[in-house]
Amino acid sequence: MPRQPERRTRIVSTLGPASDSPAVIEELIAAGIDVARLNMSHSDADSHRRLASRVRRAARKAGRPIGILADLQGPKLRLGRFDGILRLERGMDVTLCTKRSDMDLDRAILPVAYRPLSEETSAGDEILLADGEVRLLVTKVEAHRIRCRVLDGRTLTSRAGLSIPQAKIVRAAMTPKDRRDLALAVELDVDFIALSFVRRRQDLEQARRLIRKLGGKQLLIAKVETVPAVESLESILAASDAIMVARGDLGVELPPERVPIEQKRIIRSTGHAGKPVITATQMLESMRSSARPTRAEASDVANAVLDGSWGVMLSAETATGDYPVESVRMMDRIAREAEALAARRRVSRRRIESTSMAHSIAETAVWLAEDIGARALVALTRSGATARQVARAMPPLPTYGYTPSRQTLGRMTLFRSVVPRYLAEKRSLEIAIETVLGDLERRKEVARGDRIVILGGRPGPVEGTTDRIIVREV
Image 1 (cartoon, rainbow, N blue to C red):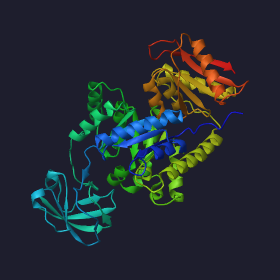
Image 2 (image 1 turned 45 degrees about the horizontal axis):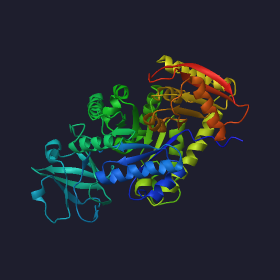
Image 3 (image 1 turned 90 degrees about the vertical axis):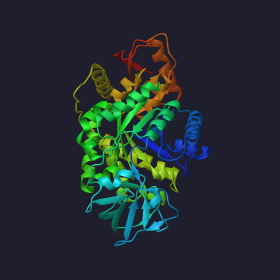
Image 4 (image 1 turned 180 degrees about the vertical axis):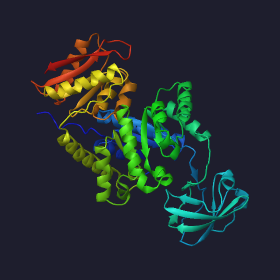
């Protein structure tokens, strides 16, 4: 009997101190991650090299591809470094200082690694720290010091994020650190590069030029986490290969009640464009210290899947949490339940406006597979474009993307519903089909008598040649 179908929603897992050992990485892969995220905000180049190597070694051992995503820090404002933990209480006075020589041992003075802050801040502004959990009211601005009063407090550690929603801070899209990290990501041959704090399409165009100059071909993910990005979504979407709904900083810049509305709009628009969309940040936040999520978190993950997310992401849960592997298993279980509900609700087929012949062929193949009761869909693809168009059509049955390109194999780890498989170059389409059918049967993913719908084209180095739909019986 064929085994249980693969989960269709992809799981992205951030690696960190809680999950950087070879043993834990192997456990994460066994639990179901599809993409490993390297957070370039933390650790050094050698650490990222070790992590990438460990992921690839574990993926080979598991016998399935695992994508690698390098997430650039971007021009995020942060506190500087200070010793220990500071407890900020409501009503307390605190000073932010931007000049190192002005620092003293006063625990009410916090360093900020951004010199122009005094020029871009005014009395009456609110300053948010640690993803908005700490709120400060600016009472006075001096040459290198910003005097504040604590409105909402908590414990604070060094390097916490800082945001001023009212200020019109204009920073370069990529910092010198980002440029170094991007070069490292290309050197490591990662599959995806995520650009943080995107504000306009030119930010993405600049990053893509740098990637190409370095000889890379990575897919570029735009992280939507600023108000300008929300307002310019259409042009940003056109300039990117994928979108990440980065709700942490987006939730700081936007009122909380707007975040879920914008999240749904971003997911819908990105899916309609046929591009991967990842929903990220605090999805199972309580599992940093608990073996079970809250009911609200479970609902959050399920709704992200039901809304059409191609991927859902774990951040601190797997990077620094106490239960990294359990967090992945829980996300897998929630996603499967949501997918089962979506399948039961699929009573009618909504045609998506065709944007290309490739999309029309892919959507027709999905319809045909449903009509004839096919067991699976197969996309024979070189660039991954055919598999991506099948993913866009939201097939209700397992889809396998076979490719002779190792690069495409990594890219497809983020494609919803698509199981990436390597297939060496064949002399003819018929030989490729026979090889694929034999592989699926050997893996017990199909059985004799099952119908398979295959999208294929002329073998060879030319991309975009998928021009036929073939129905075969095992």
